[in-house]
Structures are given as C-alpha cells and as structure tokens.
Length: 173
Image (cartoon, rainbow, N blue to C red):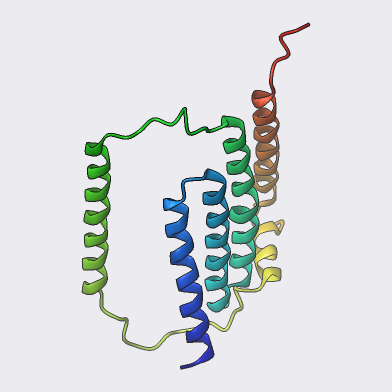
C-alpha cells in the first residue's frame, strides 16, 4: 500500500468516526469538538488532493469562525437537560427512515457511476497557487476588490449586531 492510501484511510476513519460522534454525543460542547476534528480531517483530505489554499480556507472559515459562532450560540442558549424536549417515538422513527432512504439513494447513485475514461487535458497554468488566485480575485481589471471589501464590512456589522443582541439588559438601574 502506498503512503497516500494509508493516510487517506486514516483520515477517512477519523472523519467518519468524528462525524458519528458529533451526531451521537449528548453533550453539545463535545459535539462541537468532534465537529472541529471532522473539519480538520476534511482539510487533510484537501491537502492530499494538493489543494493547499482550499485546506487553509476550510480551516479558517469552518474550524475557526463557524465553530466559534456555534460555541457562542450554545453558551448563550444555556442548554440544560431539564429544558430539553423529549422527541416522541414517531419522530425518531421518521428520522431513521429518512436517513435510511438517503443512504439508499446515495449508495445506488454511487454504484451506477462510471469512471471517466480518456486523457486529462491541462493548460499548464497553476491555479492552486495562492499568488495566482489573489491576482485573479483582487486585480484592478477584474473588479472584485470592492465586493470583497463590502463582504468584509457586512460580516463586521453582522458580528457587532450579534454581540449587541446577545448582550444582557441590566434591569436594576
């Protein structure tokens, strides 16, 4: 077995086990930690495909920003076992049936796929380079600099709004 195949199998096992532990963990904080482990192992898959930029963006966006927001939300909601609504058996049965149908559809689609046969045409340009991607996105000719800055300002305003909404009111004035 080649080294890449061994690393792929290990990353796949970590990804699947941490994904299942995310679903089946009863503690929401533990679920969030398992989800972060799953995100990091998916970034490892991107590195195996020689997509370094995608792996770094995946770690920064998902493992960083989204998980921090999820943890803040969990802590703000203050989830307790006493407040948790127990799901009826019919709802659980419906969830199991939905998962089984989805798995069946995905397996049937996977079994019916055929590999692509033929030569792979390359242009010789390096689109994996962060330098090339930065030049394409932020060059003056393309005009993506202003939408990029607007998105940054929009995210900053959304973060400030979330902090202000979650702030507790002091009723004893």
